Length: 342
Ligand code: NDP
Image (cartoon, rainbow, N blue to C red):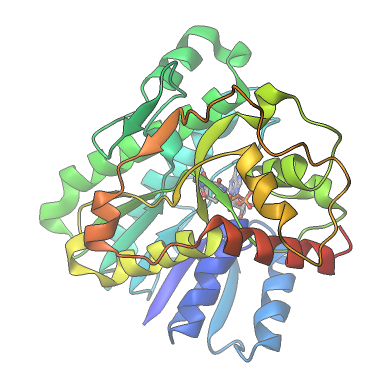
């Protein structure tokens, strides 16, 4: 079977491509420029996956009408991951337009030009599930982040960068479900949406320059664990939830394979963290010497309160991923970064 993966050069997507190829699928990956495809062809070529298994095509503007009309032809399923996750776009539409138009566009292209498609998997986000709450909360697939959409409506360019991003994920996912509801009686495919929280773990995509150019989520981990100076207590006790990039990718593969995943929105999450816990784990892992800024373990009197947690019963029931631990993710990430001299 041939699977279309959009934004194939991204942090998560290249792991999706890798797991697909390792499981025997053929892949067509989209990138925005031919140049960005070269690394993919080389990386997988070296691992024995030549042009017969991996095809790379250019879709330069996913927001354009009919952008995916050619790319979808002849594929059996689609993994749509391309969407801006950066912090520096001022106009909220810079996030929202490619997120929403890209999502609707690929579904429209599938309807028109890809009768063989059986599944469409869309990478949404826990950013479409929640806006950071003011009290400790446990979220489920029933929750929707409407707050960030409202913030962007009210504040426009002055909204928080993460709110603009989260709003784009809510709006794109809502658009996907709406399109699916309106068309599902007439199509041969089912929609599955994967909602990851912060994704960490070893990068295998092309990163030009230094660690400053890591993708947004891994950059946050790198800045907290590997680089920078002493951290404040407030920072170290900042909490969120996370999942390993390889488990995120596996969730995307299982979403194609599991019959019960059809029509489901699924949170794929390993659990909660605060930065202090990652530092504690990292400090036990040899032989990757970290800069000498590790704080004393824990701060007396400060209790760990996880502000953002997820109910993962659905993932366990339908996908059943054996999720990686903080130790595994930390060891593999530090090894990967050390090999780059970072
Ligand atoms: P990356 O930045 O590594 O990958 C993003 C991919 O999307 C790249 O291929 C990028 O292409 C492409 N892209 C970005 N902006 C546009 C645009 N305007 N038009 C077309 N393509 C674009 O990030 P991730 O791998 O982390 O993100 C992949 C997906 O996962 C996104 O949908 C993101 O929202 C989602 N996600 C990520 C999480 C995380 O913590 N990392 C958590 C939850 C969801 P190019 O390289 O050319 O810019």
